[in-house]
Image 1 (cartoon, helix red, strand yellow):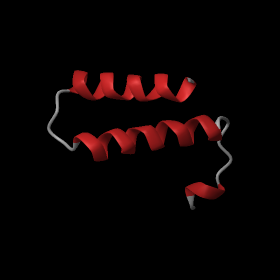
Image 2 (tube, rainbow, N blue to C red):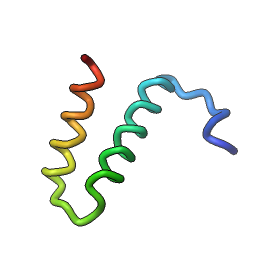
Image 3 (cartoon, rainbow, N blue to C red):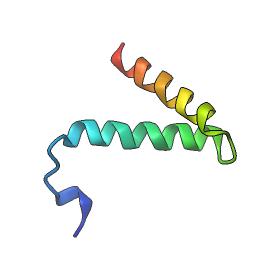
Length: 50
């Protein structure tokens, strides 16, 4: 089944989270400590709220 057709309870929020994850991952790449990635994602979420 394609994920686009599934009925997620919080579909819009899920899409935002996945987009932020990939945006941060593509910008930083792999190999960073978890704390660095976590902080980058938090900042991306904060910018989303503004």
